[in-house]
Each structure stands twice: as C-alpha cells, then as structure tokens.
Length: 142
Image (cartoon, rainbow, N blue to C red; front, side):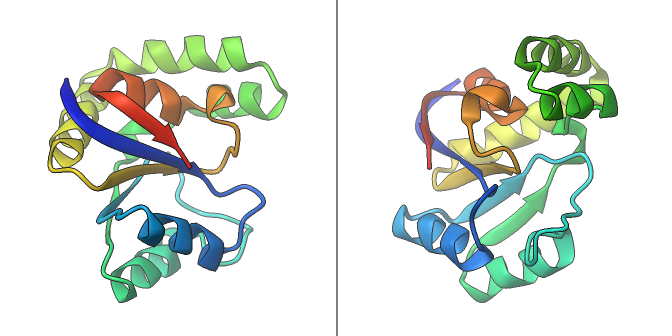
C-alpha cells in the first residue's frame, strides 16, 4: 500500500474530451485501463484510439486486462447486481494473472499521477473501486 493518491474514472456519460480534460485537470500522468475487453461502442474509448489520444495529451496509457472483470461479473454489473459482480471479481483477484496485474498497477500508482479507467460511472458499482482499494489508501473518484 502507498499513501499516494489514486484517481478512478468511469467514462459512462462522458465524451472522450470530457474524460481527458478531467485527467489533465487533476494532473494524471498515467491512465490505467482495467477493462478486460478494451473496446467500446462509445466513440474514443476503444484501446487504440484512447491510447493515441492520451499520448497526444502527454498521458501514458497502460492496459492491464488481467484486472478486468470476467464476463460473468460484467453481466452481473450490467444487471445491477453489484454484490454478485464484486464476489465474482474478488474470486478473480485470487488468480496469479490478477495478482501480477495488481502488482503492476500498484507500482504505477506508487509513482503518483495515476488513474484507473473503466466504463461504469458509479464507482461503487464498478470493479475499479475494488482494485483501487487493494492498492492505495487515498482513492479519489472523478
């Protein structure tokens, strides 16, 4: 654990420019995408386009797919079953790949200026909050 502040951002209901403006306004230097599948029907949020847009603004983009929610968890989240999603994700976090992802995310967060990204706007309904709480004491949802 580190005392460094870690931001989280759900892009639901936001444009890419709005999301990137928020990151810039808060001094975010690294955007850590914790989606299992970094594709989006929302313009500007698929991995390649988002990564290029981040880089153009001086923000490093890192995708950690091992920290994404398994399909069953995503289905539960879309259905509003937050407790079920959290249970599925907690079980996933016990895997070796997720533990490696947590270690990498913690190292990035320890450098400061990091933000975890996922779709869900409400952090209490999203696995990114669980990831953030595992690796950092000071979590700020944008």
